[in-house]
Each structure stands twice: as C-alpha cells, then as structure tokens.
Figure (spheres, rainbow, N blue to C red):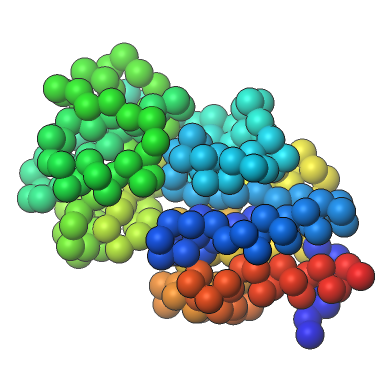
Length: 270
C-alpha cells in the first residue's frame, strides 16, 4: 500500500472522476469525507462546471469544502470568493462570430451566477442543464458579452470537440486559454484561468505544499492542477495524455476510483 500520510489536501475533478456516468456522487464518498474531516484533511472540488452546479452535487458538504469552478476562473469557500478571472469583453465579441461559423455547435457564456445560451435546441438544453443549473436563454450572446462579466466560454459539439471545434480556434491560443474539457466540450478562458493557478491559491491559503496535495482528474482541463500535486491520479477512463502525466493511476469513475484511494489515504493516516 502507498504511504499517503503526508497528504493534507485532496482535490478532485467532477465529471469522469468523482461523478459516475450517471452524474452521481456516491454515498461512500460522503462517508469517507467525514473520515477526512476527522483527520484534518481538506477537500476541494475542481471542475469546468459552474459553481452552482458543483455545490448542488455536493450539497451536504458544500459549506465545508473549497470549490474551483469554471476551470479555475473562480474559486470559493462558501460564499467567500478567493479568486476571480474574467474574460475581456472585446475578446469575447471577437471570438463569438468565429464560433458561429462551426456547424452544430452550441455556445455558452458563463458568468459568476448564471450561464447564457441562445440555442433553442431542446436536446442540447436538456443535456446542458446537467452542468449548468442556473441559466438564461437570450436572443444574442454578443449583447450579454458587452454588459456582463464572463468567466468562460463553453462550446459544445454533439460529435467531438477535439475534431470539430479545436481546429477552428487553435490559432487563438495567444489570446486565450483553450482547453478540450471533454469529448463534447471545449472551454475558452482568460490565460490565467486554469485549475492549476486556482489550486495554488487554495494551497497558499491553507498553507499546504505540492507534496501534501492529492489530485484526481481525467481530461485536458486537469493538466495544470495535476502538475501542482505530487500525488496526482489519473482515472482508468482518463484521456491518454492524463495517464502519461499522472504519477499514479486508479480505477474508473464508475468503479469508485477516487473512493478506493481515499480509503488508502485514511488507512495511511491511521
């Protein structure tokens, strides 16, 4: 068994990691969380999801954890904002027309308290609500970009974000942070807005080092935070790039991969 006795902070991605394929957090995790608390181990959820969606999934413990949302554009503890990185409105109005040229995409502007879409596609809206519990359907996203601080642009393609969205915008990498965050999703953020930078803020606040941090992830938007933890775990279902980068591996999200390692962590602390 690995010795995790130094660990003081556990950080987990949500989709494909802590959540199973049905988008559920296991009862086992909530039981293990109580054991982590008894041993003074902090927990942080780090996701591309909006803050409201993350705390909805983790409602029983929402006031006891740190939350990194929108891929690191915002970090909070309860109602306290620890970090906030918005996109410049002129950058958003420049990129929206480019995104509109891609067939079969849906664009989401993510603000601190709500998401905005102009899609009327009922299939997309039904799926989208899993990730964005607070949203508004508007006539024109360009108008929203001019008046509302936007943390992230999320773009969805029903076939493949890597194949159909990324090639069209990869030449904008000097202006934005571009992350393929899942098979169907790609995220555009401010260059400073990634999970790694947000995690460093949390570590600084808690006085926790890289050697005392354990991280779980499965996709490209987890890369920077994996680099901020010695105990970096790739899920069995992770993208091949994450498996190469991580120092450790665990079972899939549907086979309690996070929970299995947390059990080992608790035993190490005993």
